[in-house]
Image (cartoon, rainbow, N blue to C red; front, side, top):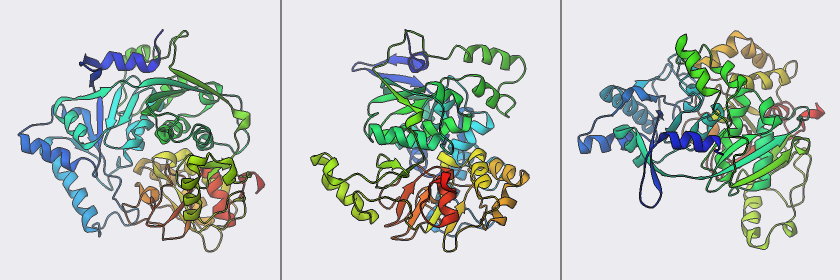
Length: 463
């Protein structure tokens, strides 16, 4: 009667403390340049070493530029954080994929594509979107800097066990509806606190039909509804994705691992603390209109009217609309946009670039629109070049940049100017997320492609 989450969590629980907190063993920790420096300083202050460095992997991503990566980083703070990460990894014996090297990439893209992320694992990183790895059947979640230090020194972390929720999505998706639309729809219905206190398992025929990369998009944004993390039970799609990757088990070890992985699923009679079901027929291309990921609508719908909003939420709703420059009750279709960003750990994989390139092929980017197409890793960049995606983009007036977190967040050179509208395939649309006073509209790669071609918010089904 156990859920998949319970099985993995319980198998990794070393001790349950008075009060309910668990000492949880961690199979793999990923680190990057932003949340690890203080943790390493803590180690030095206590005269500690990294307990199991072979289970820690680093890849700089947040601060790196997406152009001219062969040149020194110009921003002093970014340069310092990047060099500090390299120095820390060298001192403590941690494997690092440095900027410009063949495996470098956004940590949540790099992990699965190298085969380091595997079903049944517990995975942590000082980054909220660690939930991405749950798509492969892992218990993966973000931790704070003090917890990063805790894992470095003990390979364990102290955590309270979350409740469980299962979200089922069933049925066939409409044309030009992608996994990003699915998760934006779910968040629009449940709100940004609908998953608070829960670890979510996504299930149902729609989820099963998704590719591995599409599943990562779903789990990536599970935390945007307040959940501790999201996961999907591994199946043949998962096993096919992992097989043959560099750090995946090989030979007899593969057969042994595969036998164990096939057992990783919730029991038929498992009881979740909460269970919710959605119909795929109700999901259309989505876009956000406000300043949190829950403020989303189907692209042809109108914004809610103030009278439709709960009275206690009206002040924040109106504040959000004022920031975005929108009116309640109006439609977004036809609204002019300034920037398009395709990338991030949400939609920076090869499948996302393929979808965007296929849509813009034979068309031309709208004049006045600045578009940043950013692969999530060096392997994605290499594949985009080899498949001709780069050529397709350039013929349509776009440029394929170098990998990094880029315009997902304002920690590198790719910032959206104040007041400008950006249709972004990233995961957050908070005030100033992409730059001071920037305005972010979250969407999937196809909605982004349609906007890039027309210069206005457009239903991808109408081109």
